[in-house]
Image (cartoon, rainbow, N blue to C red; front, side):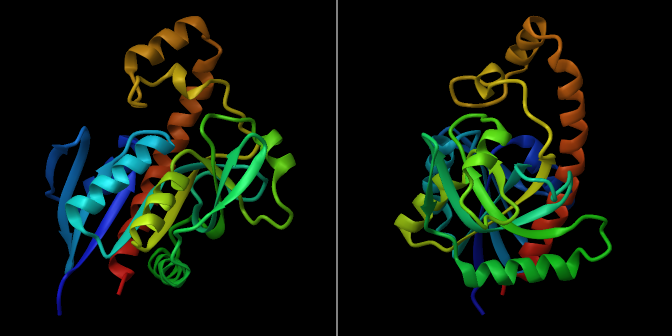
Length: 256
């Protein structure tokens, strides 16, 4: 039976490294300005690309991973912030729809493979029983910048289930749809609905939307009140990262 190839896309090292630590040796290389990890998971070839933050970088990385590995399916994973009460830090949400939020309007994004989404959720639920976090189904809301959750909540379409805010999936979905590669997506909650972020993403990132330690330190010098929130978010991200790694491993094992 021919091996399947899975393309993985995640934005940040904090989302990727807990997963990499669990899978053992990988081949790591640079390609077109992106870091790529290649390895085997059971009878599957896996190509993981670190996209960096933002819709544009995510779309570029998706093209690179498709051109490089010709994957049978794409899996986007990462962190997200809960918009409404319900999901808590560490819970894992499987995308049932992807919406792009721009100029106070929502645009539905194609690209999600709903038959595989059900398979993905079932595999994670079966493998992660008793792991201490919930597996939820929800809507991924992609924004081009950090926006207020209370404002987003006020514009949500009626009936939106377990919405979370993130900054990449719409770009990935657009390219997946264009290239006709099935896409599934999951994210772990890194901040609750009542955690309003007190900074802009450009406060902490360079021109390629990568987190810069120098810019983080400079932002803290200018806004020392951010330190308690960053400490809290760091702790939450470690929890989210471990749960996310477990869910991605379960997804890779469960894909038929």
